[in-house]
Length: 482
Image 1 (cartoon, rainbow, N blue to C red):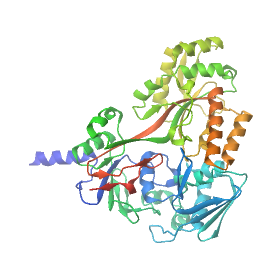
Image 2 (cartoon, one colour; image 1 turned 135 degrees about the vertical axis):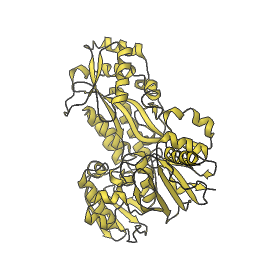
Image 3 (cartoon, rainbow, N blue to C red; image 1 turned 45 degrees about the vertical axis):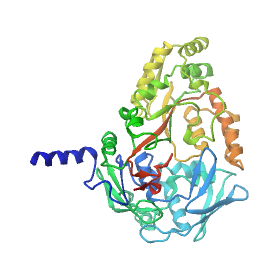
Image 4 (cartoon, rainbow, N blue to C red; image 1 turned 90 degrees about the vertical axis):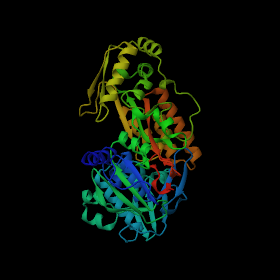
């Protein structure tokens, strides 16, 4: 009996289960990694976005592919001149019972802009409002420094949700992240327990009465769903990628685009990389499939465009030649440009493993000396650098401007198209201009697209209505259990 008890304890530890029974009516058990934080404006990881997506309701949902804006906490987001914007709020309260007002947003955004959190650039670099005021308890007024049609897309950013007055006054961000108070369909009951998880209780329109969040390793959580001891696993490790299709069938697993992508940025001001022919040569020497199947462990798709699916205005009509792997053509281009010798490729935090695989592949494909090195603290690099970009919004403006800045690319026509796209009156007009800007980047190639991230989930037979979005992953409030 002691041996059986020991096996039971070990089984719970491996699966990351908290000890409760899966299958309880109205209770959805969900496996996730440990979130980096539960402070909405300072997170960029999938687990954190999943949890805060249930705890908060954003002003709106934004679909990058169609440009469609669906109001959520906002009743409307409108402008007559794209400089002066008015946001009308629906009546709502925080989980502590205090009202969510226009001043809640104004005060929160002032803090976000000043704290240098992950979402701070949405306000300081992208929105660029001269003035944001609460003109009534349910009305936010924004005055921009130039016309912008991207305001609804920017305000839909998950990091711009409101914080209650209590934490804005105390500024105890670490304490708040352990017991966050949002305005969404679920509240966190009993606080967050690092290494274990937490329990969400329904207070709004969610389908499940309770959601039990269990922290653990993806492989064990995958096996737990398969064994029937967990309802939903929100990440599928690389070694389970192929088995997922047979273990769960087409109606019990899903893949969705994530707001992240990888690039190789060239120092265009450096004479060795000033010729676009050289840059195209290196782009054609990248075996993206080897990155996807190797160090990136099937968590990405090889790039087929500069803009990843989570950030793209519809499907790209033309092919992306620099996204191809053609070693012979790459070598010919470097020879044509008389490229002088090899180069160092620099990497930032978290990108070392896939950068080193990239470097080995470039050396083999192009027959030039290529080494990898951690990026020094300088803006003047003498070689390309890998970029692991995590987006805060669904607007292409954010990514295109960031890529141009990373490479030092300052072409006037590109900048003009980018600004015109940002100011465009309709999603269709903006989409056309963003594609023009993307096409120019693919022609001049200050950055070469490498991969775009995607998420996976698998679920038990009693789970239904699973949908996912780039920023939340599986929408927890919409998932039902039988």
